[in-house]
Image (cartoon, helix red, strand yellow):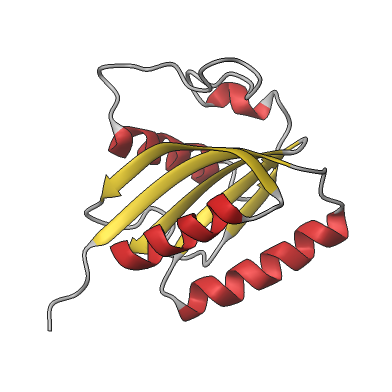
Length: 147
């Protein structure tokens, strides 16, 4: 049987209430266990109540967990930023990498603007969904010691 097609999805949302450190740790434990059981990898960046997450894995698993996230009462303003097939995982070693980042950290992400603005990321005709995935991978891996 052929291996399932790899898929990635990047989304941005706001927490309905800020997460405490204990709540973030509990969320990570739960997410990592789920992801390991469902062959998912990725990273979650948390910035003052804003969430940016990359999910990677088999298409049905990625789309299934994203559908759950969209219904999760802890999220509002869930916005899909990138979605599609990938040749390889950028976060293969992490069932769920995690970092609490400051707004200044997001300046490394070209085109990022706060969620309150009409469009969170500037649309760039030269940058497709795979490029966003790679940009996030570079950002995270560059600062991997901090995560």
